[in-house]
Image 1: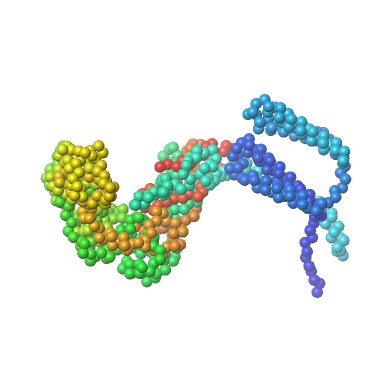
Image 2 (image 1 turned 120 degrees about the vertical axis):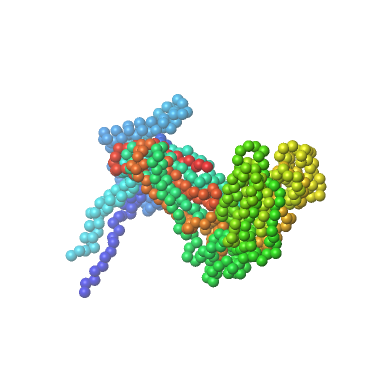
Length: 136
Length: 495
């Protein structure tokens, strides 16, 4: 009689597990920041019904896991090239950051404009840092 | 033929698919959270729910101090632990489009509470539902009715009546009472043969209210008294008499004006059971004169004070307090001095507040003439000793009065007295009561609704309390209808 056995094969490689952990970490962090942003604009809209700290706990835990997961040597990345969508994204991020910083700091007066502008410059600086990284 | 190599190849080919599936799953979590939050705020799925956990974090609310305990009532011995109210109201302003509102309250209440959820609008329309919580005592407890109230006994199957209970009293380890009025829990047969029973005669005239606590035995077949109209002021007057036990009115009599003639009233009590009672004489004005109160009993204790009539007669009273307040009815000169504990006290010397103070218990007060009112925080006795009450006190040292019934106390207790007004069912802690209100029926869509949680008698029933753990409001309307969120939501604790 033929013996039939079943087994479950783990479908992911070490690099993929690390990628999943990293993705979950990013989702948790972005979710927490997004809900916090909404809450700061309209207090009570989120926290009266949902505890956003759950995302923060996950972000911390997943961040630690993704860092501790056995390092997999990544393949050399191709040089980052931004199309028009990339530039549009950078502009959007810059404007969003500037507006957000100004919104939160508006009560302190004209200094808020300066700090908001510096925040926008910081985003653009990060773009240059990522795009023209010589080590890559 | 299926080989290991083929399986590895299959997994490698589909690995990216699994990876995408996991990423989609992870990415959907915040999306679901977002939809939930949106629905709570905008109700585009037709349901809007507001949960009140702590009463201090109501969305768009006016918060009130006092937490969730809305009812902890005073006991007869005067202890009040928290602010109390019969009713907690929640005012909700809904836009048009909502069809129903479900109000669910998680509550803990005393065993005798009746809870009512109600909805009202500014119009007359209203809807309500009353709840009585299931038994708190469980199947291992048995209820025995005594003449002073009810008795709940655990683990003593042979106790079928009051006599059996008292004979087994010393075997109980923990005995609690839900009321501070321990005296009313005494079975009548305990003092049936007491030598302290006598024919009590209050010969003085009393113009004001007279409230007496007294032990009446089975031998007390009637209470007699007389009423007369002084006619100091024109017009009719009446005297209201009530016989009460443990807060329950046994009988009442209303004696109308007799046109100045003395009326003799006899209240027949053919089947009176022995025990501590309250006799309450309440005239409608100071023209009504009460006198010649007669009954068979013992341990007469006058609450608050007495207002002696105008007849010049000596009255002897006893009080255990160190102060009393005296006031003459017409002219201070008419009643200028008392003999108190063998010492003469001139009222003119203390007339500023008419308060006479002693360093220790006053004891005997001899009042030589009438038209004077006396009051004492301890009340007055007709005899210096209260032998029946003293015997009762010695007997009931094992009893612990509880201002409020708790599950913790129930676990320790073997016997629970309940001298409060009996109701048919008892309560249990931690229950959810729920009612759905039809906003169409209320016929005032788009206006402010008042949802209330009430517990009638919460402020008057000894040992009563109500603790609200959580209140949830769920407003529903047709899914995907265009309607705004509730405009206002506030909780109002009302006294």
